[in-house]
Each structure stands twice: as C-alpha cells, then as structure tokens.
Length: 550
Image (cartoon, rainbow, N blue to C red):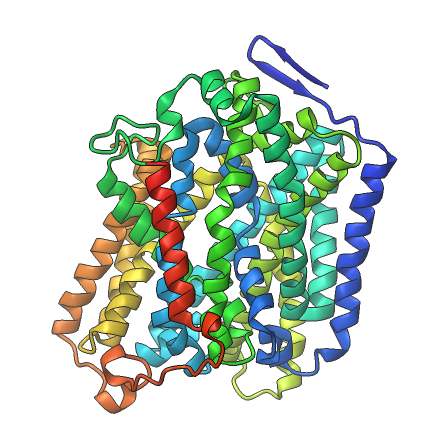
C-alpha cells in the first residue's frame, strides 16, 4: 500500500509467505557458507586474509561487494531522488579512476610488502606513530560505518514490516557475528560475492519495471520535469546544479581526494585484494570490480529518480519514513509483486550485511595485528592471535550496535558516510601519495601531516554543523570541499615537516617508494587478463558514459 497525505508518506509492504521464505533461504545459505569454511580457519592468516588463496574473480566481486552497503543502496537511491543523475558521479569519476590507479600503481606495493593491513604498510614506510594513529582512526571509522548499515537495515524493516527497531538491530548483529566467527574473512568474502549477485537480481528488475511504468527514460524526464536532474556536468561551470558545487569541487574534491582516499587507502576494500592468490590476481581485483561499478548507477540511481516522480513529496516530511533514505525500499513496495518483493528485500538485507561484515572483518584485522600485537602482546603464538581475532569480532559488533544509534542524528545516510570519509580518508591520501612518490618524505612528516589534516577536517565539520560559522554549499558539496581542504593541509604540513626532519635511507625504502622499487611486470599468458588491457577497457567505457550523460 502506498498513500500520500499532504507531505506525510505512508507505505506498508504487503509481504506474503513466499517473500519470507526467500529471506529465510538467504539466511540459511549465508550461515551455511560459514559452517563450510570453519575447518579452514587454522591460523590467523586464514582468519584475517583467507590464507592469500582466493581467485581474482571472487576477490574482484567482493572488492565491489564490500562497498555495496547502506551507502550504495539506500544512500545512492536517496540522493538520486534529491540531486538527480548527478549522483552517478560517485560511481564514475568518484570511483573508476581511483580503482584503476590502485590496481596499476598501489597494489604491487601492498601485496609485495606482504603486510597484513594498510597501517602495517604505513609503519614500513613512515614510523610506528603513523601506523598507530591510522590504526586507531581506522578502527573508529569502521565501527561508525558498520553502525550505519545496522541502523539502516533495522529502520527499513521497522518501517516496511513493523518489526521492532531494537530487535532488528540485535538480530542483524547476531547474524553477522555468527558467520564471521565461523569462517573469518573467507566467509565474509564469499558471502559478499553471493550478496553481489543478490543485489543485482533484486535491483535490476526494479529499474526495468520502474522505467516501464513511467514511460521509459523520456517519460521519466517528463514526470520529473527538471532538466538539471538528468545531466552530469551541465551547470557545473558555476554552482547552478543540484549539488551546488562547480566542476573543480567535483573533479578534485570527489574525483581525486574522496575517491582516491577511499579506494586506495581504505583497508576495508584493500583487504579483499590482499586475499588474492598471487600478485597478478591482486592487481586484477580492482579492475574486475570496476566493470560492475560502471553500470551500478542504472540499478541504484534510476529507481531513486523513478520513485521521486511517483512520490514528489518524499523528503519533505519529518521522520525516517518520510526521508529520501526510503526511496529504494518504497520503490520496491510500489512496483514489486509478492515473490519479487521478497527478492528485493533480500537484496536490501544482503547490502546491509555486506557493509557490516566488511567493516567488522577489517576492524578485527587492524585491531589484532596493528594494535594488540604491536602494543599489548607482541610475542604470543599464532593461535593466540586467532583467538583474539574472534574475541574482537564480538567486541566490534557490540560497538557497531552502540554506534548504530548515533546514525539517527543524520537525516541522510550519504551525508553521514561522506562526512566520515572527508575526515579520515582525505588526509590519509596525501600521506600515501607523498610517501610513495617522494622519497624525501619522513616518518615524522607523515605522522604530523596526517594528525593535523585529520584535526582540521574534524574542526571544519564541527564548526559547520554546530556553530554555523560557514557553509560550503549543499551537504554533498560541503563534503567535497572539506575533503579537498583536509588533503591540502596534510600535503603542505607533511612537506614542511619532512624538510626539517631526516628521511630513511634509500635501502629501507626499497619496495615502498616508487622510484626505488624495481618494476617487475606481472606475467599474464592470457591477453584479456593483462592489467593494462582491463584498465584500458574500463577507461573507454568511463569516458563514453560521461559523454552520453554530459
């Protein structure tokens, strides 16, 4: 049922036994994967990095699947209804160049160093202080982003099905805890691969049915009746566009800082590539992930536009049930019959579980290797760290439950996540780029620059949100500019401090700095598996799509 009274939205899902059966099968299969993998968890590397044994097609789909949480599904659909097709920037310029860069330039460093984590790499390149600061800040980031997935899942099922909000949160927590404890990262990765296909099967029919009901693409444009909602770059010479930010902010703030900061330095996604069976597979992982990423706007953004044409008052009332965040769930209820609705709801569940599990597995790895083993218990047997990994998985999920309620203070899921990325990932990108491409960068330069850049971003967010001292445009535009300023601050401070401190000798930087590392090309016997071929194909598609929707 879908009704609109003034500006209040009232939507109830008429869910039948077939829909519940589909959801139940999903839960059983997911836990079954965990049980099937539990005997392989013999060492800490098995638990945290899958023994570096997974094929690239699995790690590639998991690489993009780990990113298909509440941000991708609810957040993208919500902002499509709010900002139009410009939201596709987050998939295209906000992802593809960075994914190609991490595959070609950064993955050989990550995989070749045999480090267990991004903070571990920072220790090798900079110093212990840089590693410690990044490990702690990354732990905070993963718990907060895991919480938003948990809270979003609970609210969707609370609004649509009337399930108790607190019960939904704790059920989600127990379920994720079960299959991670059983199968570790392997369980998470294989489930992310399954969830990738479920999300496609749940959202692709929504796009097709939704467009058919509104008269196709031209009919959708007529119903929305806002030409700026259907272009990527028009109006960006100034601020006359839905984002309220010009092309400089989009290209540098999103396309460079936010995008490269996430895809190149966030251990949540890098961890998937590190689980690959060899260096060639690790390099292919982000490239394989780039191809589905290119086409996801059509199944995550278009439904948001479609439901906005049907429910123009969405986002104008109070409460979560009236917010843009419900664009995708309401579209499913409005267009899907029983059975297909169950598949759609399962796809939503899969996206939430994917986001939560990805963050929890990254959190338990960083905690165990970069905090616990480094500062608390250095010389314990491997079985002890495996035990600690399982314990901290429970702790991480309980912390995620606590942070789930913090998400209630944000009207938009996307605003919440982009605020976190601009604080934690943007300055870290400057640290990485200088460390990899300028051998004169010192350990203390990297540490002080990272701390100052992060602090500046936090201060800007606090002043904007609570003191109202300045505004940088819309919520989306504000995150882009804040990320760019934080990156620039870290970049400049790192250079200044490095010039006054002593760098490491060249011998210690081999394999960590681009100019000091021998370029050993990965040998591929099959032409279509070669990184440059895959990268070139993805780049061509990227350019064509930007031209079509200019």
